[in-house]
Image (cartoon, rainbow, N blue to C red; front, side, top):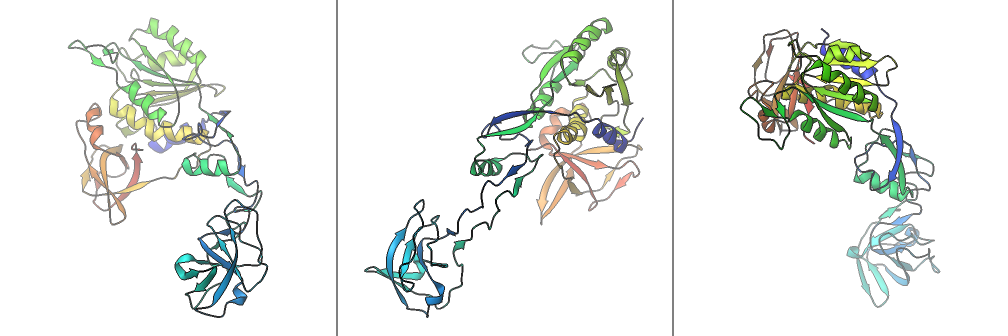
Length: 398
């Protein structure tokens, strides 16, 4: 048996080299950037007017009540104008180029404009006021986005601004999500009294879709002679296998045995944690096939995905994931010498994330997940955890 820290490190060390694909900028939403993005020009590319009003040469300003004759109007999207007489002004619109010979913009709100003349109502102005200087945001050839950046609407705006109609993103590995067990029937089937509907594969695929990670689903029965050819075919056709069930010590738990017979090397089996202790992880010798075999209890499957598999795929995509923590809002006792992933509901209080225990009926109680936001990771070295103590928090809410 390995510790949670050891299991996490072993998984992280077995990263895949993901392929790249090029998609349109709108298809890139939610994907992970696989190329650096640089500024193709200064941002902004010219000194930009930030407020509607007039542009003047500050050196000509004498004080409140001074009047400036309006020479012209500088509209956004039009070629740059210039003052013919430094004692005059040019009306300017937001987004326009700052006219030559001017260095400050005074808002309409601070003016009295009549009969082609603008009277200034301010007694003090500052050079550069209401002007967005050229290259203030970024200089030409400056790196704007780095590899591993998750693309949101904000990044799409940057991509569009540098003319990237298509962008390279990481392509997720060919993945199979596999349930096992004779007691499981499909979602469309009315179960017999001794059966239950398959939910783990749907939960896993839904969690993966949040990452834009597509997969195929399969089901295995509890007979080794049928598991062997099915798993061999799935393994040949996919880079990553995520199994749920069949990894404990039961007489029909054939998954670890079959995987090793198929050439998948066991990296660990059993992790010192609750839930999810029977977790099995392995790779082929060339490290080109990755297999996560998770316990079948729904909460165990769910926890293992967010604790191990999601961070693993983020590492493969070179995403720099930041750890999160939450503060325990009540005392909790847990006697076994295991890392305990406590189901919690969180609330923000005075800028702090507080975690409230919401245990439910154990690792089989997937209905309890609807009432919580994630898991608080409580270390195995302690049995009493006090309110006010901070621990790592694994969230599954988007």
